[in-house]
Image (cartoon, rainbow, N blue to C red):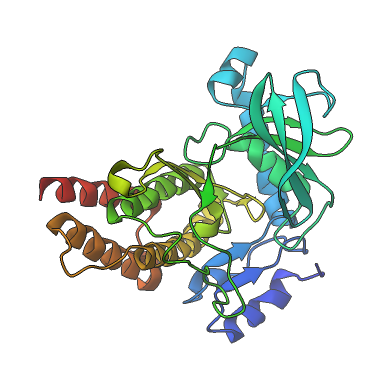
Length: 336
């Protein structure tokens, strides 16, 4: 974290024409550089913890609070419980560690007797954003059915959130390596998918992003390694099939002004979604005896990925259109 300003960042972005990922969280960006909107390759952007994002977050939280006129209305919207502390009698925190990330640890727990995951922050700022911003983002996304839902939050003795626990879930891809750089490291054997399942993953992640963007929220880290999958047990006909899809990890998420910066930031996320479609195709084994529906899905996803990654800014599809197109791909494949 440095003291980058929009004026200092603008020429740096313009000079790096091959730049795909930019992490400038927790700097001094009062506005966003215009270079973000005209960059031809930028796909992953973290801007949380800056004055610009903080203003947008505060405004969004205020609107959410105003809309929750009563406790019943708040629950209907999927708002998480606000617990007095981590020692609330409704919550039990275990010792088994489920995972560790930048500035936080996730452990097993139970909320009102149901198994959950509990995220505990140990740092205020990290490479992608800040703990308070991710905590607030969890509160704002509780009603989205295609993300890992935040069920409860607390602030004492440390910031924490209670997340739904998906039994048997695993990431659809592995995080980038030194060899893959900005792209996920993929295991085409252990993480292989049927094309119909790849289409489902694309559609549900796209639906999550359509929901977020309609509310001025960006994810900032759209990857298969941040996409959790559950599979049917036992697998039908010996082939594992996806039973649930959730977009996870809002550490790089931020709020933005749809009026001033919506098109530029949404274009960046559409580009990263195009790369996710490319990675899904890699995980789908190609066979010489592919069925007509599989051929259609593969070709249609490849064409959509190309448009997401390379279309000029004004011609790039938004996520509402992307979801419609993915639904149409599925409908055609069923008719073949």
